[in-house]
Image (cartoon, rainbow, N blue to C red; front, top):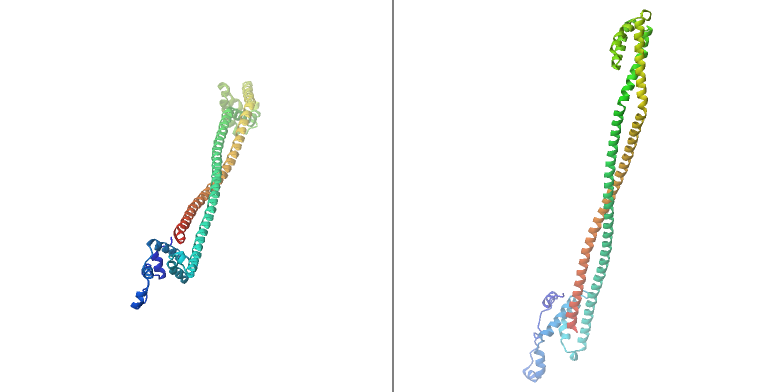
Length: 369
């Protein structure tokens, strides 16, 4: 847009004047005035048509828009527009033709500038469109990567959850195996404890009592312990009643009855030793099986714990990869959005440049022609 005629004339100090408002000629003597041809006088006082004046004003506005020439040159050309272009071609003076050539040179420069501006704007738009496509492809690739890593992260979380459940199940299996081992070995533990107590009592208390080797102050206590041991093991009560009496005597003081009592108690001792020995022997296989199950369950728990730890590490790595992909996708999407805005701006600039070139060609240039 080159502005109104009044505007540019006001800016450069050119008065707005209709062609009819010309500087009046010096007063002539009446005799000379009477001799002037009528046609010449009419030509001097007649004005331009509004259409011609409008065309000249358009050309003048365009010239004023030029920044290629000094203001003095612009004022000179603007002042000469109407005085040159408004004159029919066949009546133009060589100076007027020169003025018109200079005006055309200015207009050609303006057209070239407008065209160059359009070309630059189109190049910028082309570059922005290309950049926008590249960003769009990058965003699409980042979105695909994010989707893949989201899937991997979800799978890693699922895997970790499954491994955690497996580890908990393995721990429960260890607890169950321990409980079964404890319950299965309970009777064997009792039998082993009783067998050890029985053998210890026979060796450390009964034997010295029988041989008369126990100190006299310990004889009564030792006899009571043997009696209590018998009660705990379930010996015959009548036999147990006679044991303290027989054991309290020295070997030389014991009679036949005492010998029988001691023989019976020893037989009971041996019978229970055999019972406990057989019970322990019979329980060896079951004890081994239960121990093997505990060991196997413990190994499985250790393996499940290691697998869970590995799955946790994988899950954390997948989480970090997902976070990085998400950050990159957001950054690229933001950049692509800005490029899309730049593309819109570049397109608007191209439209404006096309509009200015078209306005120039259909306005001042068409008016000049």
